[in-house]
Image 1 (cartoon, rainbow, N blue to C red):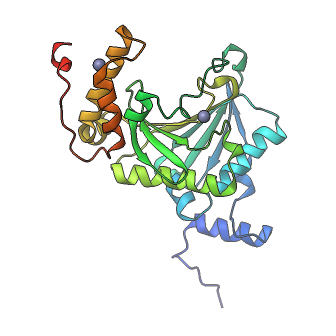
Image 2 (cartoon, protein in one colour; image 1 turned 45 degrees about the horizontal axis):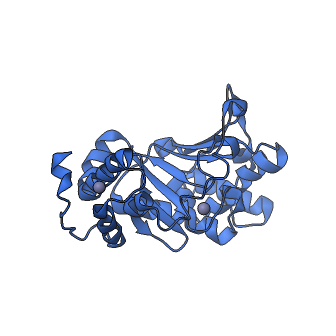
Length: 268
Ligand SMILES: [Zn+2]
Ligand SMILES: [Zn+2]
């Protein structure tokens, strides 16, 4: 008798089952997913699962840990621009750009960590969500980006504990679901490619979706940030009384209505 094909099993879960049997683990990482493909400025890993599928199948921590091991342990590359790109239903592409590391200046030395400074007004104001292990913020330069930072001072993705990394990817997917946005790319700069010492992931959102969801929902917050940025230009010592009010407000969840009492907003 001919073997019955189970058409319920898609080819990806079939791959996972195969690897599972090979390696005796249930992580399901196919060794083919860990082969880097070179291009001009670095190399890429191709994963047939989407970002969401990796998380839903509880494979995200294992997968990212494995490709970081290939890069840092095997290839001894520590300065890199790591970029996740969605290939829609065809899965995920993760690029490591490292060949122009000598042109990168790295973070400013001796600077206090802005992400750990709980008194920094702009980072307080930009906060949209506090999770167990991460903070989610709007970009302090007001670009179309959501910023995910670990709450603990961590400088490399590979420095996260297993638990922290599971949470990190999970909380990222949760916020994207909550905001109703698709992502275009996610960027994690390491070593010389960083501007800040504290690890951060920038989630790039396409302009139309940004306007439709994020910009609308956080309109008030964005206005306040614009105001703060403008004020700081003229007044870097941050003595503006209005900003102290912003501080209090920023602790309130952004979906609650905020009163507009800033009188100097109109004039500027
Ligand atoms: Zn820090
Ligand atoms: Zn002001």
